[in-house]
Length: 288
Length: 323
Image (cartoon, rainbow over all chains, first blue to last red; front, side, top):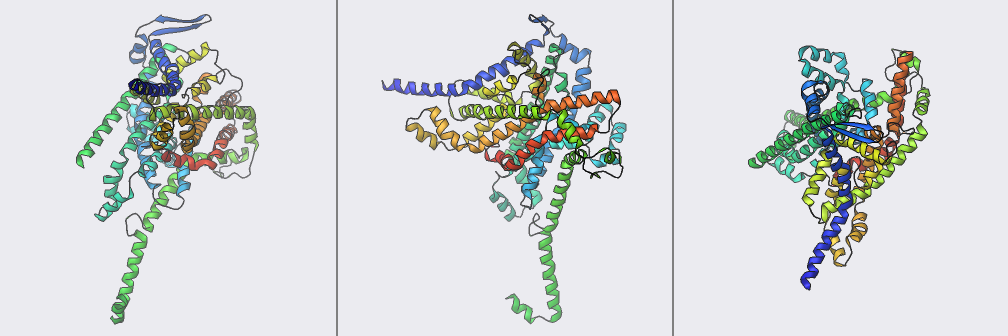
């Protein structure tokens, strides 16, 4: 009798938990899992929308072959330059947010003011507004124009890397704008390192240069990792990301195949970041 | 002790001593007893901060000054930042072209509705992830992380087809309905924020309530929600602002709709101006009008931000999102 009662209370807990998660789980199945499988299915089919419904014609790997091998336009002219840009943007954003975050953690007059300025872009990083700023040249740094940096890059670097770098420089401020959230994460993360650690380091005679490398950076490593992931996710909707305009309703099959190729690249990028992070934390843990 | 020594010194050595003392005071003040506390260091830090802040804000300053320039100020090579006269015509034009009253109402209603829903539904899911037991919890948690890192472009086309079946295209339902289930724009991030927040709360409160025989629903509603106001505010503000700014989902779902939110309205304005430039030659006022339109879109969230910026900047740390 007693045993039955305990069992039922455990079962009751599970039931209550299931009720709580049910809406989200249903939403996941309907708005994530189902579209994901559906989109995978569409990459192998020619999708035609007619009045009576949708017809699918099996085409096998044709779309993947087209994108990867036959007509390189979509992948090699649009997507790859942006991915190269992205690979340069991620370290820029992460390092910039790290430096500004640490600066803004210092006690100084007007700290709140500076914090709110650096966070401001998160508030209005609307795709359309940023597009306007980029097209008006609001994104460049003034010395870039004065010294004609873009010209030198185009002449001295190979085309494959010159174009993404030039593009990156001409929208540099907008790239920095994408670090608002990351700065806040660094500020919050920096506060998790107790002040006593710095004090004891100072008593041991460590300078601020040493404390940065030996205490601040290792202490912040989980937050840097978080920033890396957040940046990759945030750049999905960066207005210059070609995947936004290339995945459209004109051809469901090709667009879906392109989106899946993009997904594979993004997942492998995140995988690499994760592996590096694991490696680094293991190494620093070994040193201690 | 020092005084005694000084008094017994010859005048010459005394001067030297005072001089040395002054130098050391100056050195301490300028460079600091620690390398990061002197005036020189502070000055350097301010220079760096003000410089970067200026670079950061330049586009906004450019926007604010360009939108009040008339044709005369735009053509005058002597005018770079400050216009000769303030001209409000661009703002009026942008106001009309954006159909501001309608678009504004739609943006406010839709963003408020979605953020209101996400505040509740994401909290429910986040609480379940943080404290409750349910079958396949590990699997669902991986699903949550996966949803977060999944580019929306991968699932957008099937989602469009799905909503087409329901005849929901060109309505706001495709953006609102997922929010009811704790999804929608960055819903997974909000669930993660809540999960982190609830897991940092002490367990004693819930256990006490449970011992008194309260059900999970009651505990969640009466015990957990009242103490999670900081997480609620953070999620609400972020959700509102991001939904306000989002142009991706509205572009995909509302391509034929008459009345659209501001983010789409501004894209249409840009397209219209480009079309006019093609037909009648480029107009010098196109740029100030676009800037005025950008300002009109930014302004409402900017006002929200000025009153709530404390929550935005500090809230991220306070919700324990980063732990």
